[in-house]
Every structure is written in C-alpha cells, then in structure tokens.
Image 1 (tube, rainbow, N blue to C red):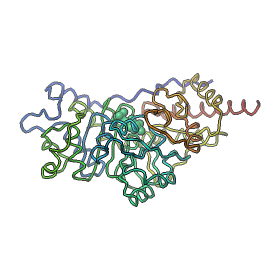
Image 2: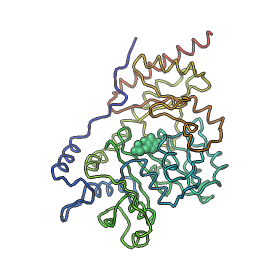
Image 3: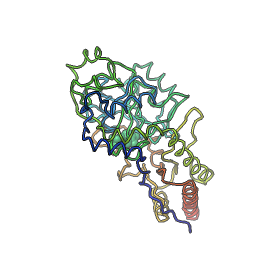
Image 4: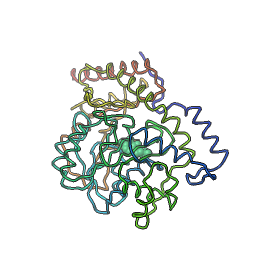
Amino acid sequence: MERFTGSFTQQEPIPEEGIEAALAVLRHGRLHRYNVAAGEVGEVALLEQEFAAAMGSRYALAVASGGHAMATALRAVGVKPGDAVLSNAFTLAPVPGAIASMGAVPVYVGVTEALTIDLDDLAAKVDRARVLLLSHMRGHICDMDRLMAICDAAGVVVIEDCAHTMGATWNGVMSGRHGLIGCYSTQTYKHMNSGEGGFLISDDDEVMARAVILSGSYMLYGRHLAAPGPEVFERVKYVTPNVSGRMDNLRAAILRPQLRRLTEQCAAWTERYQLVEEGLRGTPGLTVIDRPGAEVYVGSSIQFLLLDWTERAIGEVLSRCAARGVELKWFGGAEPTAFTSRYDSWRYAPVERMPATDRILRGIMDMRLPLTFSLEDCALLARIIRAEVAAVQQGMAAE
Ligand SMILES: *Cc1c(COP(=O)(O)O)cnc(C)c1O
C-alpha cells in the first residue's frame, strides 16, 4: 500500500538572495525600519514600493502581521467600538479577531458550495453594517463584480483579506484591488514567507495616511516611498493614534527576492493543485470545487467536500488518510483544532445559525500543498485520498 512521507508544514528555504540581504541587515544592525544611514533607503520602504508596483496600487504599507493589517484597515476606515462589521462565516480566526480587537461586532455572511461568500445572504444583510471585511478564504474568489455592485449600492466599504490570494485575479483585476483596501499576510504558510508579516494596499490618500500613522510611523512618514504626500499627513497626523505594528528591515530583506518570483511560485502552486484536483475528480461521494473561468487562483491549498457525510465517516477518512501520511484538515469539526475553526467557535460574538452554511462547513476538507511537494507527490496524494474516500464510502453502503 502506497504511503506519503512528505511534510505538510515544510516550506521551501528562503532564496539565497534573501539570506544574503538578511545577513547584510544583521551586519549593519539597522533593523528598525526608520533607522537608516544618511542617504540610505531602508529595506521596508523599498519593499513597499515594489509591492505597490506588483499589485498595481498607488500605496502600500508593510506591517507586523496579516491580522495587524486587517485591524489597521478597519481603524483607518473609522470602525468604532460597537460597530457591526460584515465578514465571512468561513474564514480563519484572525479575521473575526481583527474585528473584535476594536470592540466591533462581526456579522457573519454564509458560504456557498463554491466556498465563497453567499452573495444572496450578503445582499440580505448588507444594510446592517458600513464595512465588509471580505475573506478570500483558502483562495476562493467570489463573483467580485456582483459583490462590489451590492456593496457600492449600499455604501458599504470593502476591505479584502487576501491572505490566500496574493497573486490571484478576478476578471483580470488583482485580488485586493476591488475593495478600498487589500490586506495580505507574509506568515510562513502564505505566498511569501517572513515568519510573520503583512501588507495593506490602497489608492485612497487619507486611508493610507491614517494607516501609516496607525502602523507606528511617529512623524517619520516622510521616509515612506509608497505613501501619500506630506499635505495628506497634515490632515490626519494629530488625530490618528500610533498602534505600533511595524515591519522591520530584516523581514523586508527576506521578502524582496520572494516578491520578484511571486508569479512563478503561484504558477507552481496551481500546477500542483490542478494535479490533485484531476486525481480527485469523479471520486464517488466527493465533491470537487469547480473554479470559475473569471478566477485566476493560487493553489497553495486544496479543498473538497464530503457533503452530508456523517461525522463518523469523515473521522474515518481523516484517520485512514493520516495512517498513510496524508494530513487532511476538517474545517467543519465541532471543536477548533490547530488552525481550523468555524463561526460558532468564536464565542465572543453573537451568532445566528445558518443551516445551509453549516451543511457546507461540516463537509469541508482541506489539504496544504507546500512547494516542497513534487508533482509526483501530488499525484500520490490524490490516489491515497481517492482510495480511502472510496473505501469508507463502500463501508457505509454495506452497513
Ligand atoms: C493567515 C490568515 C490571516 C492572518 O494572517 P497572520 O499574518 O497570521 O496574522 C488572515 N486571514 C486568513 C484567511 C488567513 O489564512
């Protein structure tokens, strides 16, 4: 019986160029982003300029984490304690966490079988809030044209959580460029790896000036290369708090070479994703997530559904796959484990039950596809999952 022996948590090493640049920063010792020698431009400022260019935005700001980027974005658009903020029922804990961090209250919108936000549910709830923190969870992008039409008509500001869509597009527009602000993470499991880190991008002058001050720029914002001019800061600098959460030059040095090869990396992920998807397609009882033609996605992880399976049968698939070295995550598990959780796990916020969403969440299986996996590895992973899902299904049918 075939067994997989790769590690689902092993990313690629940092490119040599990044290691060299990091050593240079360590050697000169100027790690704080505003600690620069006369005439020097720091790694963080350069990274921001390059990230803005790569995403096609006017401005970019690098921060300490993806979660900090989202919280900064919410503050920059004026979310206040007690405000309702729309967000996805299917997302990762730091998303409602960013909302809760400012004393605001998440209002969850359901998920469809495509694993994207339920736009009918959004249309029904859009009047309840001024802001939508939209999570492109696991890289699945909804019909962004319809989403923006719904939100624009209601005057709702859209902030995009692009933790899994850095490098992806919808209808030719980069993820993060539909809403007012795009937020990204450079945590180890995302599309660029600096251990921890994040970005936010925007074209809006005042939003970005506020974000820069919020990130902890003191009155050193003039050292940014991808921020608005001083006249904009004059309007916000006395009334915007410093909520320290900067990126440092060491992490920026590691990220700059990774950004230069982001497009190739994204293609490598998607090649792996498509191999696994092909291998799973047609497995009885297993629903593959069909991706819309308007979406160019980054397949850094893959999801499939075991819709309407019992908990016991899903548990059996998980344990049989695990026994063969295949680590699946079950987002629908009742108890949050490791990185998984669902909207009713976040008990600090009120929830309204969403039966259609619960049915989808109960069936979501997830597998990471780090780039240390070869194409042969991916084909093997699909064969194992296919065999074990089929075995459990036959067992169920025989009962
Ligand atoms: C990882 C992640 C984040 C937050 O990123 P951190 O850098 O870990 O704070 C936000 N949203 C989603 C969907 C994520 O997966």
